[in-house]
Length: 383
Image (cartoon, rainbow, N blue to C red; front, side):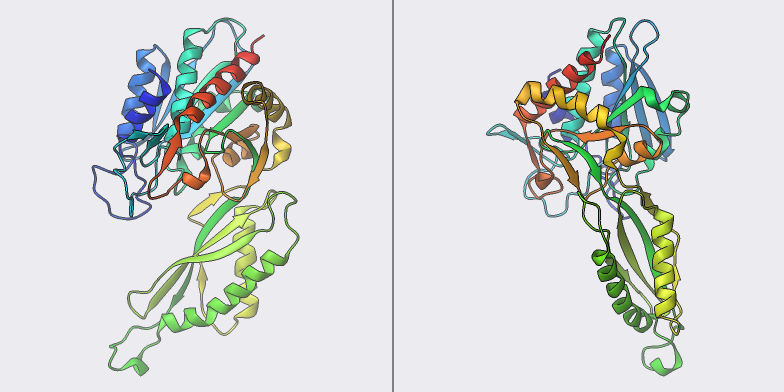
């Protein structure tokens, strides 16, 4: 199957990550994509492993095992989930092709990258011979919300049994065929205030938690400015903190979601503790709670993967004539791999500017080029 047809099939299979929302069952979670890809790999004769992470949500891993005892493993990783489809102006699952572009939710982020990896994997599987690296492709869940899929992969027996120095990983994201070897991490938690409920006609008998939160938020903003003023990473910039959703259905409770972007070397636990200590010092007369993080993903440092960057870069340059190496503010599954001491970079077709948009699309020519680059890269590592 060619890469365009494979991507069209994947786009037609809804795999929305509801991110805690209630959405129609026929649209959410990754099971349809998992089943399709399992059949794709099994039809070529590849060995597969399927691991349940949550009800109806499975990681899928396929193996290309060349003869002999390969000394190197190359891991392709792509997430199966997409963001929701609110506000889209096109058929999100239509996979329409027009003017060299394929449209639909996930076409760019990241089913396009998955299709390029899978078709390269299929070609490599047909040509497998002694001296080639083992190629493993992991199709993971929950990248768009919680990173649970990749965090399960790094703890699987087949991976933990290997020497991390023998593994290189390429994580699919829309990078315009550039290499991303550094990016921020993310940690999210809730800031909560509690009060005493009462009837709205007699507010003096209660304690409105929303008012307490309103007193806290200027100090949160002050902390965000403090972070931004600290010395940052030379390529990524400063750490950031922002507030997202605020909820307080009744006056006895109010919560704000806090998003903190991490720099290489920072830990999620350290970031939460710093925030908690800051508010504790500034707001001694306000009762509040800082929850444990409900999302935690480390940053990706560029010191982990120089040899991988050089090797993949050679394949990119041989195909398109140029090579660009970027650092980004967003997070990816690559950081969890590097946190397990596995060199990893981010690479794929498409641009982040088209990800999550109302008319998401990807250039078909980039799909094909990504497939060729990945194929060349693996072949170049054969001995």
